[in-house]
Length: 124
Image 1 (tube, rainbow, N blue to C red):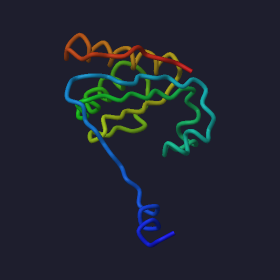
Image 2 (image 1 turned 120 degrees about the vertical axis):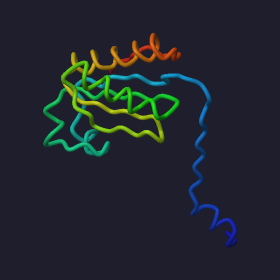
Image 3 (image 1 turned 30 degrees about the vertical axis):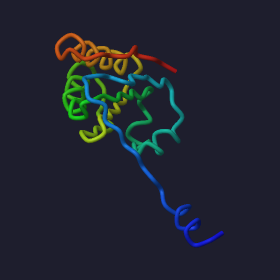
Image 4 (image 1 turned 180 degrees about the vertical axis):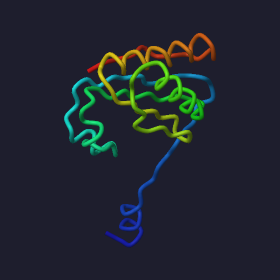
């Protein structure tokens, strides 16, 4: 292996593509996740593991995650686990019914008020 091959192998290439448009690309509920998933997501299991579900949403434009987070926490008893205005990612935790209500509320708002194309809410 030559130096060029070694150098290329040691580098990680990240390609981020932003698609223009208004859309929710993932809206998923993980019911009864294992506590390792909380830790790997950077959530505190001592605080969040008492919750029984994780809701994950991705959207563009990415700044919409701020609005979605506000809607999610105001529409039910969920806790905000993570919001990223640069990637458009939102994570909420709470009881399964609360996470489901919050995702329904934010998907409905984005579709009906903001004119977004939305995906169905999925659940595992």
